[in-house]
Amino acid sequence: MQPTEENKNTIGQIERQIEALLFVSPQPVSTASLAAHLSISEERVESAVSVIKDKFDKESGLTLLKLAGGWQMATAPDLTDTVDSFASFLSMQRIRLSRAALETLAVIAYNQPVTMAEIEEIRSVRCDRVVETLLKNGLIDRPHRDNKKKSMRRYRTTNKFLEVFGLSAISALPTLEELREYDSYEEDAPDEENTKDEEYAEEMNNDERRDDTA
Image 1: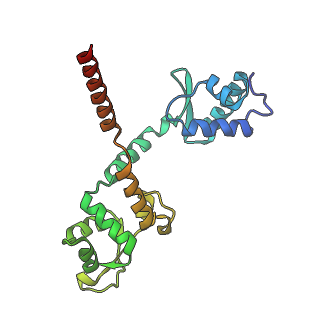
Image 2 (image 1 turned 90 degrees about the vertical axis):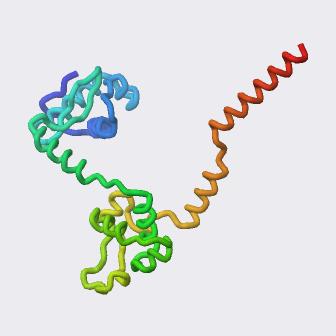
């Protein structure tokens, strides 16, 4: 069923739901799958998709593509150059941190504002180069008018730190007690691979015993 002229540009609840589902799906979603999930007819899905696609083509940087028997949300073809250049920019901004940098970042996050001397006391190693790396990546900062003596400068995390680690605020960090509980759980958790090896070895030993008594 095709949308009428009256509702052709109207986005209703079904259209909004389908738009949201296509937005979160990493792969094309078939009309049948959308219909089954929303408990509506396939004709209603096709009608809604037509409305969404029409809206996208007229006033959005997105479009809907029919791929592999399903629908997938994508960027508009005329914006390819813009999207490609931005993707290249993002790949250059990708942050790769060493274990030492992550440990130092954790010290700063849980003790901020914290001086270089305090960081090095906690980690028991020199941290000036690691701190410089964190500063260059914009994950930490210090007040511009802070103490000129390097060892006494106070460092703290930035908004970029929150964005990279998906935190709404510093208060959203897990507590040290929660981290200890997690570490304890990891240590106590059985190693599935070793458990399977032990079960296999025991089964082989049982078979050998049966053969000896046969």
